[in-house]
Length: 206
Image (cartoon, rainbow, N blue to C red; front, side, top):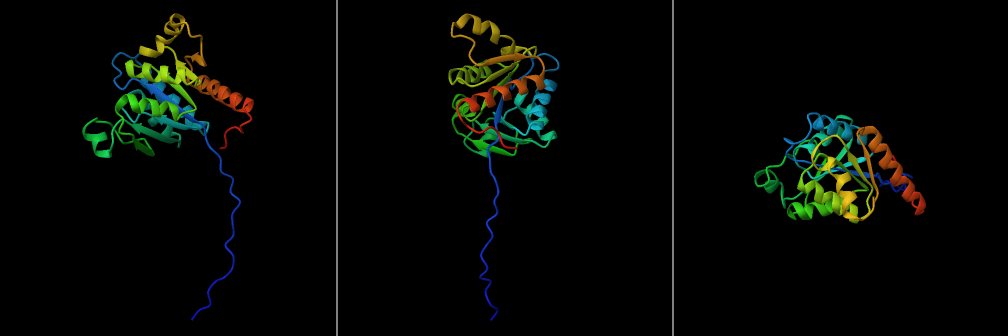
């Protein structure tokens, strides 16, 4: 009988840290968006991945889908939160895609419940074009005092936000505007890191 190896198992001193998660919120149906809105969404996804951040989407078509495509092109991580309760319902009932995502979480809470979980799961939210659902996601994140980035010049909700903020008498919140994807991501990252520093929380680990 061979002698058992009784040598102690080495404990590797790995340092684990959390990455910031950026949600891209936007129109699933993009007929009303500007011509290059999908390309801009893809670029936003690329910029998120380039910085070692994690992309969060609603696991849907249109703007979120193209942002996921961009993030995966840069080797990024993409997590989707589906309104469906199962993979089957995601595909057959909601008719939503599976590709360009590393993980899809099936919430079973339909769109309104999914929107809440999606924005709460994110460190910041970027709005690109959009319809009513995008506005719902924006207002949830606004009420939660999340950093919000609006990619202007993409049509729909994104180009209405300034007017909405001017007329709802709630102040500017933590909302920033830009028409440049890279600049928008960098400015949001600055806000996240500044707030964490003020709260005594260590910044991102890549």
